[in-house]
Length: 404
Image 1 (cartoon, rainbow, N blue to C red):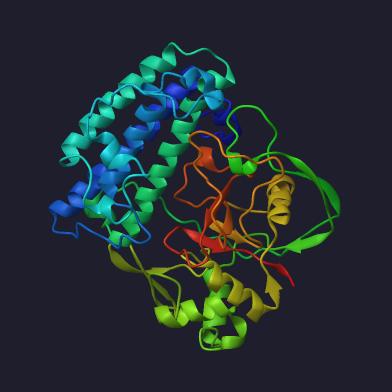
Image 2: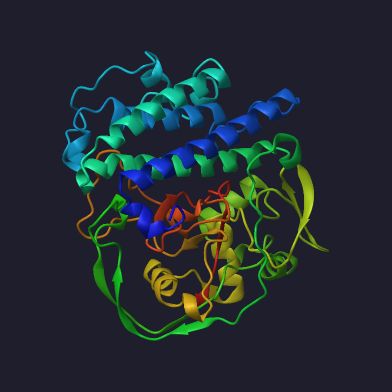
């Protein structure tokens, strides 16, 4: 049950309690891995522009629970609460100054936070204990359980963000006992054809529904073809070997400017594409299987590959329809987050809600669908959407394609 994406969105108090404990234990395993990394002489910092500080991430998991549950006197109202209503005091007087994203920018997060991992663990233990006590006394309705379900989703994302930071900091898997998962390798499958259909894009009310999935709308979808799985390294290498990073014609104007400014010759962390793919991963240089999905690919790179191949990124509705209806026919997803075509936008009727984890960006951002091999299984929902800038490549992101 803990791995059921739809079931966890509608979980009762008993199941939520088990899941919240599981998520916290996962966060603590990552925190311990970062401690071992630093103790062994590993770097205690990483680029602050696109990855988060591990101590801040861990502490923020506790702060989010405390802010929306432990200190939130209107938590039983769920999204009907007044988010600006007065709150109870934190058990840590400095918590808001350290962990409120509105007060601390990303660069500051590498210097902010509680005084070391031991203090963070104590804060996490106290906040979780309060959360579980309040959960046990909560009413069984969706409104009363809303912030508990949201806190679970938030902490599961914290674990994923820790994996992204661990990759950036090159944590050694064996030395740190970091909870890395293995990226699957898959044999190539033929593309799938899906017939024209009326498809319900987005989510229906009931349980926890992230704001950017609201609300379900019927869409008339023409017939289309789509890759059965994400583009593999074997397919991506052909683009690089054919001079894909050298030819302006495959790139959008902002994509080419980005690639030139970055000096890109391959996706992030890739040291070699020809004669085998060599990637910096888990603290060492590894030769990865050509059958694995290409990963740490920006949307700029994904679009360039598609132009070179005479293909395009799938639309969100194409991707979602395939994920929801074509699994039995071989549509595989969840190995990497996947870029889709179009810009980030809200569905009709979308409105921000208290504690929203996916605020609509100001503009120019893309949409990622699915999840990665480092995503908790209970978060791999076919309706889930994530927003990211087109140059984002720190996440475990890749893509699939459709005929142009």
